[in-house]
Image (tube, rainbow, N blue to C red):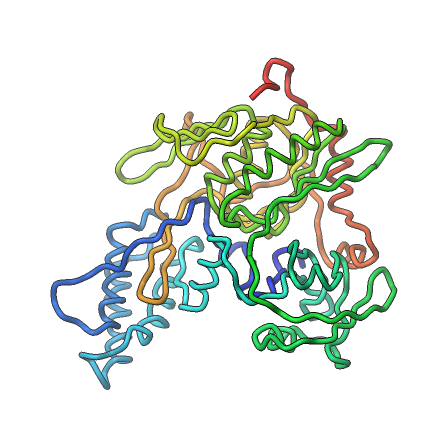
Length: 442
């Protein structure tokens, strides 16, 4: 059992990633397609079905071997059965469960159908918008999502004083359940939360609120083995922009302090914008290059000094005052590190720039996807896959240089204030490479 893959954001949807689970954006920036149209008058349900299946024919670029024509025929019959009572006026929402099942049957873990509420929550996250939340992520312990893994700055959970490692015990005097906490979040009702911190029992009051989903990187410091080490936590690459700029700014702060090593913590980071990710990587890797292969050919990406070029053209706003960390580096990952997090870890390994520590990652790090709106819902489809210029394919998952499992025993240590995986990452800095002096300038 792993900590971050079991995490849930107490706002709308899980941040679960991994094989067979959902990643927010698999190695790509959010791109929304307009709903398709057909000349022949059809019901709203049939129009939604046609749109998704046209996308499967014209846009899908994944590795699924499923016969898409046969898939369409099978699920058309299911839609016909669902819409039989009103074939000409069947509403679009009748098609959504059918489409959800059809895209799942494609057997591409990178592609899935989002129901309307999931899509709205997704939009809030990628745009940095607001949604009703407590602003805390939890992991399972003793059968419940009950250990605090992360608290979003400025959230009601932060204001209530919750911290990483707290164990939730009671809710309004009754034994804690995630269902009760979820219901309180949805209703906005204030609650009394009982929890333990390093063995001490405490209580706090909090209520969910419509608040920002922005969760930008943050910096902390630890001292271990006589060395001052910076820990750069990057929880996501989708917080409505600003992730990469914040990464460079914080690296600058760490360098100004004169730290002797730096850990990038990507545990539970489900991915997000590839532009944000690439520009963040450029604070550690002097130059990275990548080819995106589609049926029509290949596009080249080069990133250096906070500037990202696609086929020679600048894409995204260049980083202001770009930094390049030249000292020892480790990247901490787990089974919940997906998509862009896997790109980050792989680019670090490929450039022999630092050591990756932790668990084998989620397994969605070799493709790019696009999100297409379908009525009130949406579908995410794989569009392409990535290789290095010499043809080396990007792996689905990243295998750490230093393996550190993060199971239940480690979770219990966390409740006592001990983060054993982070300690392993700090210790691994002793064997991590540093940049040569002539490469240490962006």
